[in-house]
Length: 345
Image 1: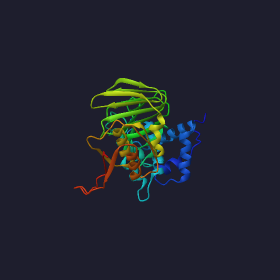
Image 2 (image 1 turned 90 degrees about the vertical axis):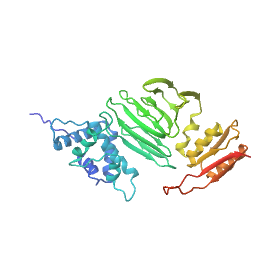
Image 3 (image 1 turned 45 degrees about the horizontal axis):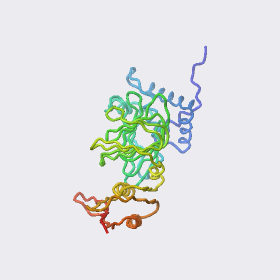
Image 4 (image 1 turned 180 degrees about the vertical axis):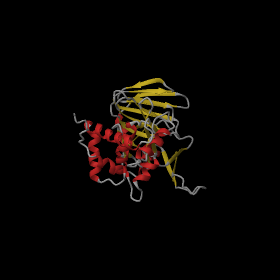
């Protein structure tokens, strides 16, 4: 009789240790190998399926192994950003992704069956607080940067499309998957659809606009499931939701990607657009008073300069003065942002 038992090159205890929240650096290193190697990757999925077979309660209730596998992937990568005083358990609970060895499948079913996205998993969520930028890595291998005051949610929908919901600014280096599109949904209702490429998206819900800058590859832009434009490298598209306008220009991509390296490059921008970018970079509000000229272009490169130094440079190249109003205590015991008032000299 032929031996049909599965020969494993992986060690199941590494997976068990992760879900038991008792894993070591060695466990993490081994799992990284499993994610990167195609053969070991498939064996990891079989271990998860075997655990399902052992602990499921309903014999006809079959899991989506991809969903469970993403949970394992995200659990191990959450450790990189763990902070003292917060257990890994609570970090995962925050994004509705709790799985524990032994009962982890039974616990996970709630999140898959109780989902509100037409059968897709609840999203993995990445948050970059105001004043910070953070690297991220998605379960499909896509990497990128998430900018200040930004929120990113990732999931695979019922059509097996990879979907990101973005509120803020993010740079994506998308892993190519021929059978799975990668879609970025923005607050302005403009969707960016790709297979594999490098691009930057800026779309804050408070601004009612969307900016896409393409570094490599190609993208399609859809509005309410209708294609409105396509892009090639070194193009920038700005969509304004209020008047439903779209502008496309050729740009130096490096100017728009410098933020992920901690730099701000203002290259022949209007004062209005410069203030928007300065406000994100320094986490302040800008108020440009009536009558201030806006026909001169701003050219600045900022990296280690303080806000006061940046404003001094701005007043040197434009006929304006800048006054900084300090934070004030609000009624809800929160503090307002600093405000910069710009007026003519």
